[in-house]
Length: 496
Image (tube, rainbow, N blue to C red; front, top):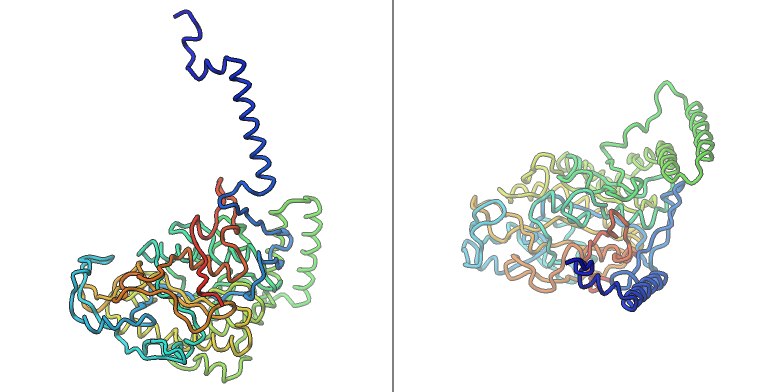
């Protein structure tokens, strides 16, 4: 017991041997050297892919930056419909729903998200073949139906949640939790913008307000704050842009010039302070927006034919306001704004078909109300972009967070949430036209052919913008974070 070696572990006693000590030390040093060599050759990352860090000048955070690889899409318009649009009543035609209407097959679950289930229900609107492709689309969306030959539908999307706040988060940020960067923030972080007088990323909220997840849908998360979306609409311009009435234009110009010189002098005293440079850049952009934003929001100069086409002079007041937002979206794309996110629906108090597409009861009335707001202006926006040649370099994505069930709820008038299959579509730059990818099962209940995830959808959007979703990362809290987490594959079948 007096032998000190008896208190040392077997492994420790081996290290007391000079031969074993030198041998293990030599192996360890070799492993460290190999790690260093692999790191220098960019081979120390999963899958052999290293992050591509955008070269961002803090003084000019929105300066245009090259994509990871050549691409036709330079800008992106995301049309997002909060509340979950019913795919079986719009774009996903299922004849079996007519056959089993009013019945309850044994495969139907007894309970779904909001409670007991009812019977299978056929679509509430007639489906008809549209365009040269003969794509079956319901009468709920007659204007969008006229453009199906330009669309690429995906009918087999799945998501990780059946709750609206988490669903919005997941679709727009890649995570059900809050605090992660949105798709628009990732794109502008990587690519900057072609317009130095406007924000790189603009979110146009619905006339009724914010969606359920609010500003998280267009937030910057842990990315630099410069890349969060700037939200305004045709009805609600950015705050504090108007010059005070007691300040003349000349005085305002002189004040801005003096402030610019003071900021430049202050920055010289703190060279290399990226936060200070970024803050000054944000103030300078705000100054430029005092003239650029009122100009882009001035819809009065649009010809009457455009207002008729978009529907700013017909239908409900909500439809007229949303139509103005659609014209604003087109004008922002024309100005070179990199990302425009257009919301059709809000959810400040639960919605249930009144403020968005969430139709747990009386879907015939509530979906019809939402479609009256969304269909004509959205179709006019896409058609107008095409007519002006903007779709040649603009990617358009029409999205919702999940689908709805092919059977009714116990109340007999609404459809519950369906995370197991839903429909979105793409059009514009780089997209294969007049096609449909994937299929849901015979009832539109679950994805059956080529099921795909939201990760795959976002990976495809990034690819169309010239960005590798595996290499567009940001180091945060010890992890290389990305929009698609550790998942996602590009859906090549949707690419032109």
